[in-house]
Image (cartoon, rainbow, N blue to C red; front, top):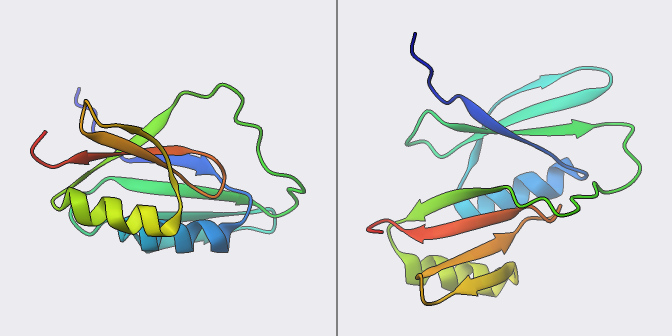
Length: 121
């Protein structure tokens, strides 16, 4: 029996804002979506790997999600770390840097943390 990662899911409050963020910050593009009367599942991909990010938007949701002490995060490697850092700094989304480890985190519109790692680490 072999398992292969398919996707990670994040519930988002504002689908358009989240899609715009992930496209600008990480170059992710919509691969497909499933729409129902109650929710939309939108899948984003990087065009390089088979892994996908599924954004779930519940149409009747009235308030942002409370992430509490959620320590879960997604990580992205990048070939030009300095250029990525400059982009995220310009976007104002860097929420934590660990210069000693050579990494940093950005926060998406819902407060999820995303780690950025140089490709050679």
